[in-house]
Image (cartoon, rainbow, N blue to C red; front, side, top):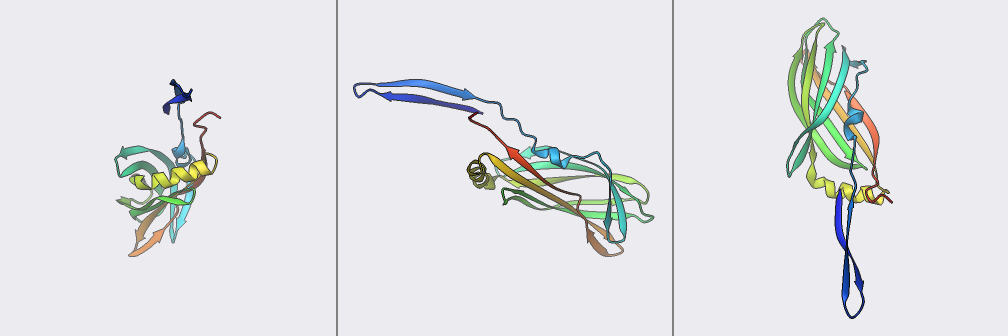
Length: 177
């Protein structure tokens, strides 16, 4: 973060401008809570799956949205194939919805084998101004909530399970005070 400005002394006869510049590196690890190497068993209706790992990184950034790309390695513990059709997601920052929607994944995991799902979560950049105001009003603190829920289809029935539901806190100290 770079801040440039002037400290102005108005001496009534003349004005004296003193340039000031502040530069602080900004480091965040917002996505750390979305990564895990700890296997966990999930039950979705009659189906049992093992989530072996979840890894997230930043994707495409445009004027309208910012992507989070997530790779989830899932093992099908069943004797029948499991179709994962889509992934629903919700991202809130200080209670403000920054992203909500679904990502089509259309992956079939064969019996007793694994697959890696790759999906994108899109954050609405138009909501960042509202979030930023809340972040500053909260003393440079933000509560981040991310929910990822894949939808599976088995024998014509749909089931949803929670792949990740993480709450974390983002803090900054931008002016170093």
